[in-house]
Figure 1 (cartoon, rainbow, N blue to C red):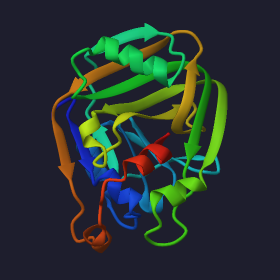
Figure 2: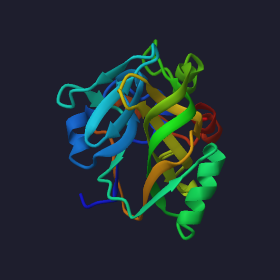
Figure 3: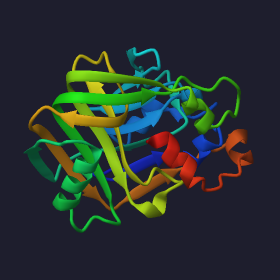
Figure 4: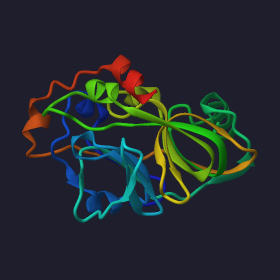
Length: 237
């Protein structure tokens, strides 16, 4: 794939319906991108793809460097990232970042953005999902048992996407970010954050979206996959 095109495997509504027992090898995902987000089989932990490396951030607080040849994902979104805008700025939180990105990309309301931030964060509040306890357990139930962690004065990287409103149910509409510490020992799905002064922000606007749906997956074939926007907003924070 070319730079700054989105590749996505499956849809977020499938996770809401508990479609997470199978998936595609992460090595295939990496053929399409070197930065991104996702989850793992049975929704065990949060995924971050950074510079082509894949990490699993687990509910117990541990972080594992994943062998992409041996691990599958039921849902992932990646891109081959090449920044078109770079900036140093302090960001007071998710609302502050939303305003900053809107100012940097005033004509991207109905396009996708990929974002990366590197620096020191005064505080990062994250959650990590522990995984399904039964087959087809939905994402809302899984995330009801999520573990939260707060990291202070943490040096690391935030990676994520802004998706337009019309893709809700296919992906998560709005901003969706994961964090990983520089030492690769901490991380998770971001609930809140604040930078400690200026951080390096790089981003790009994207207009090409490639979606691959699961095949030969009975769970996916049998799922109703109705839009459950409120459930998605609830679990994504």
